[in-house]
Length: 560
Image (cartoon, rainbow, N blue to C red):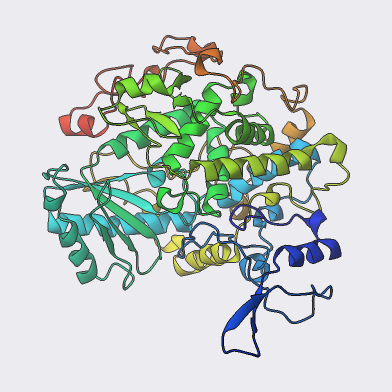
């Protein structure tokens, strides 16, 4: 069993599991030859049945991919380090929000709702991040008065976890193609001089494809990544925020999937995983091409959607021939078509995702460990399918053992970190930081990041300690009259399998030009009243300042 991906389930525990585990982990021990000073390797002649027998087989005999040492959420080797990782709080703190769960996919849906409530940012976490951004704004203003600091990534979209980093970009008069002229070292020295970072945490990655300065803020222990003149990151974040408005279920699915990859150290390209942006685009494509439009409504069963997502990218998707496109309504295309638009000498990667802002760019080009992610998705699909199968409904009691907890755990370190933030940074002393202090370069003319509670989030109540500020669907009503009650759980109509070519995948591919009533009654994203896109599209607000309009601009060629 790979200690990165899986751990033993409760029904697998027992004397038989312990014995077979010891057999699997048995390794040769060095034996001393009496006739010489050299050591000869000799296999052990017996395996102790009693687990109390002393031996040195306490470590696994295989070596998984490298692990990020600074990842609080990591559940690496949970089987052998259970007490240190989740021994204090149990690993499923979201279950404290509800007294009883239903069986099957309904119970899984309820757990995803509660996980969303629990993992969503608290006011203290929002305040801490705004405080860090305010400090960086002052520093950038002091170093380069004409430069602007902008937020992008998960903090801008609101799709961030408690341990996620803050992505910042400095917009100034530098040549982004000439990395040697970027003031990376100047920023590094200024961070040390202003005592903003933990000692030894500042790292300058000047040889990366996107040079950045990484550091950990000293007081809050929040990680920060700062890049220069990468304006596409801001545009990508605004694009994701528009998709959040279109697909209400996107928020909950992304939070679960990001936690799933984060605890397995598969959320970064350099640790053998995929980027968060790739994961979000995969989720958007899944929702765009879903055969049941009723599954995209706020009352859809999140458990069914999660299992279908894991089935698609863990078992069905053809990574060798198929590429993902989210623009123009979404479609699957052949990698040959993608390569025609790419620069000479570039080939589509294994996980090929066309950049919706630049068709010549492959978002997944550096995801060399995509097959590890596929393996993890397949494992999760198998585990959840067995847990929610109606034939096993009495074997898997969700009120005794968490269904979602079979693939996701929140470590004690994360829980203690969130509690320490709440105690160290009481938001009642600085309520203004919940509304201001983030999202702008100098306090003016910029969109605020999406740090407010999501209006489309499922399942909420008035208790701020449990709801985390979410609002939406009444859980009791959903359980009594679920809109997905008569849907077949394994229904996969219209979904192309791994054996078929993109030409055989009969997914709809349409262009939403903003006409009223397009896409089964949904209007175009650029034609919603009061939210116009860039360059005069839609009936948006008018701006008297050219600078303000330019900061909100989104590429008009991107058609959702």
